[in-house]
Structure formats: structure tokens, C-alpha cells
Image 1 (tube, each protein chain N blue to C red):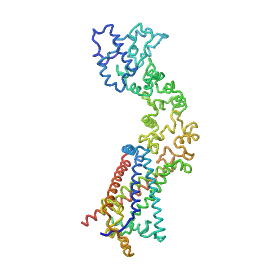
Image 2: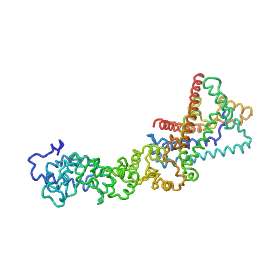
Image 3: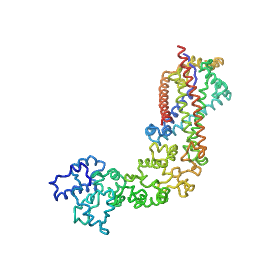
Image 4: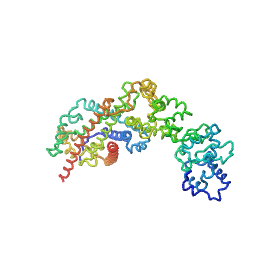
Length: 271
Length: 366
């Protein structure tokens, strides 16, 4: 079977760092958000008290800022050095939303309702772009408010005290938005949907089956074929070892996420 | 004096009621006295021992000792040594108890010149004669009880607060422990705390305006079970005590980082008294308040050592639903809620439709 290289090692490692730090942030932050829920004190004790939970939270926050900066550096390097500023920002290779994405949403909802064919996708679908930009929004909002709450004395020098109240609300609600989105929509859209169930290994192997690509992203396949670069992207099948490691990591991450989702639902609606 | 059925049954038969019985009774009481005084039996372990010992030694005190009339014939006269007003005594909670029930070494007239100090625990720790015991047990474990046990001469004993002969229920105005008199009672030893309390909002309400609803010493420092002020369990219960009157402030406090960490059972972040003070609580509008414009920065700096003036504009009690008082909080919270509802509604609908369609495709393909 022929495979296409879809994601490089840098992408995949950053995604793993992101998954680990995100789960760490949710685990160490959730007992404080739902402090009134009966599991909160238990989880806090498990983490070794609020001081050590705070330490875990701050460590994962540093990881988050780290992978975020690493990604920005990569994007700049890719556009400036690899593409030599010859990068189509609104092209099919770009993550920047374009008119086609809005059309795709419209036609796809029509397709859900049984009206018309499924729209054809290129390299990035609209929900993948949403996931991508949601991280920018999330790291920006949660990161900034988190820094304010981490160093209140420093920010208090030029911000009024009530900005920490605002930061608390934003940090808490954005965290709910991010974790609620990842543990339901992202998990379903990429791993748990019937075509991919129980998981899509491409984020760990970086390789996608040509047949799968032809079916899922026909425009990308066509584009590569027309440009004659299909052969250049060809690669061997992923090794058993990496598939196995990806499966173990993926299942643990999804399981932890779903357990946390139960905690969130209990905390949000029942206590 | 009314006797419980058990005591009637336990009353010794007639042939034993001879003159030597008084000395037998004294011996038994004296054994209890020694036991309690030197704390030979730990109060926690007392319960099972009491049951056994009751069968072994407890006989009705009242059936043997001298009658109160006999005592009042001397001590009931105004100006006599050790004067006890028989009228007031007859209205006190101990009206049914004979003098010798507490003064166990007084077996009749004449009695020794120096009589031993009364041990309330003879009844109140052992539950004899139907006396309540919970308070004495709490006292034994409290800082006061431990100080007394440790031999501190100024440690308060029961009589230090309750008095001796004229003991009334605390709702009775004549009682030494009447609610409005409590701060003065505690001030016998705790002068500086009393001085701070007397000018505080609680103190002014209680002492000058006689508002019995205002917090007094015992509301925070539980009367018999007074614990060490560094006890974390007490610190946490103290917050609930503040919240029992200031419930709205409690609810808003719980929404902040301070309140959430405290709610999880940790005592190291700001609790009510860390900002508002303890005995000296005053409304923030008062110049001397720990939260007045002049003092608030010092108060914040107790924990946030590098805090600046702007820092003190933090709302320690934010109300997301109060549009008038906290407009910024209100609108930030509202817009965040709308954002969450918007995103989740769109994507949940999207995901559900997708799941339905993908399942259908799978079924149709087969």
C-alpha cells in the first residue's frame, strides 16, 4: 500500500506536547473551577494539595507557551526559508480561512440533511482550521489571563485590581470552552466519528493511505497529481512500532479526556 | 430531690444506712475528686469506665448528706462567712442539689475549716444525677481545659465563667454567661482582645446598642470547646460562622481564588479574618478599619508583599449578576456566557448531524 507524508515529525511532536500539557492543565485546574463538587477535594488531595497542583499547572503553562512559540517560529521559518516568501496565504496549503471554507460549511450542513453531495476538501478542512485557530484564541485568552493571575503584583502596577476579577472569569470560562470543545468535538471530529473509529493514527504516524486521501481530500490528491509532486510525497507504510505507540498514547489521552469531561459535566450541571 | 429509677434501685438496703455510711460516701466522692483533679482517667476513655464504675461505686449523694436547711441556718444569714442567698439559690439550675452534693467533704456540722474546691466534673463529666456532660467533655479538650490540666494556675475552671452558687441558664439575665455579658466575662483574662472588640462593629452593636444578634466571643470561639487559634479545623469552621450571618458575602467570596482554595480545605490563603481583622472588625468606611482607604494596602501586603495601590481595587466579593455595582464583571461574564453558548450550540448541532449522517452512510454502504 502506498502512503503520503501528511505531517512531519515537528508537527507530530508539538501535538504530543500540546496534548500532554493540555491534559495537565485541565487536571490541575479543574478542582479549583468546580471546588464545590464532591470530587474536587479528592482530586486536589491526589495532586498533593493546591500548592503542588499550582506547580503542575504552571509547568504545563510553560510547556504551552513553549510549543506555541515553537510553532510560530516554525511557521515563520516555513514561509521565509522553505517557501522563500512564495507562500499563497489564501491557498490550499495555508491554514488561513478562505471563502471556500464558508461554502464548505454551508454545503456540508446541506449534505448532513440529505440535500446534495458532500463538498470536496483540499489539504485542510474547515473544522481542522477551526481547531487550529482555536488554539491561538485559547492560548491568547487563557494564557494572558493566566499570566495576570500568576503575577498579580507585577500586573497590578499598571492594571487596576478588578482586572484580576475579569481575568478569573475569562480564564475559567475559556478553559471550559477549550476543554469542552476538545473532549467532545475534537475527539469526535478526528477520532471517534464512524469513518475513523476508534482513532485516526495520522497525527502519530504522519502518513495517510493514498486511497484514504483520494476519498477524503480529493482536491489535494488532484492538485498533487497535476503538479506532478505526488511521487515526491510518497512514503512507506508506518511501522508497527509507531502505530502501537500512537495507539497507546492516543487511547490514554482520549480516556483521560473523557473522564475529565464527566467531571466537567458533573461540576457544571449537578453541583 | 428526684431520683432516677436506677438510683432508687441502687439505694443501699436499710441495714447499711448507719453512721459509717457518710464516711463511705465521702471516700467514694473523694476518689472521684482525685481522679478528676489529677486527670487519672482521660475523658475520652471515660464512657465505658463510667458504666462499670457506676455499678461499683455510685450511690445517691442526696440520700446521705446533710440537708440544705442545716447549711443555710448559718450560711443563709446575710453577712455570714460564705453567704449564699437561699432565695436566689432556690431559683438557680442547681436548686435540687444539696450543698453536700458539691461540697463533698462537708458531712455535717461542725465541718473542717478549709473545705476542698468543688469539682463540677463529679456530676458533669460523669453524668450523675442527670447532669449534662457534653460541655464538660468539650472543656476538658479545649485550650482552657488543657491549660488547667497542665497546671496553669490562672487557667479558667468551670466556676471562673459560671460562678458558683448562682448558676442560671444563659438565656436568664442573671446568668454570668448571659449573651450580652459574655465579652465582659472573657475580658477578665483577655483584656487586649476585649479592648479591640469593644470598639469594633460587633462590640459596639452588642455592648452599647444591646443587639443580641451581633457576634460575641463564643460565636467564633465555641464556649466550651475553645480551640487553639492555629487549629486548621477551627479556622475553617470560623468561616462558616461568619457566613451564618453574612451569607451574601460568603457566596461571593466563594467565587474568588481565595474562597475556592479555602473551600477545598486549605487554610493558607485569605480567609474572612485575614482581610477584615478579627476582634477589631470595622466597616471599610471607618478610618480604623483594616480595609479603609488608609489601611487596605497594608492589609493586602500581608500576603502580596509587592502589591501597589492599583492592586487594592480587586473585588474580593464580585457579583456577576449585579449590573449596577459591578458593570464590568457583569458584561464580561455575560459576553463569555454568550460566546460559550454560541460555540457549543453551533458545534454540537454540527457534530450531531455529522454523526447521524456518517452512521447512515455506513449503513447504506452495507
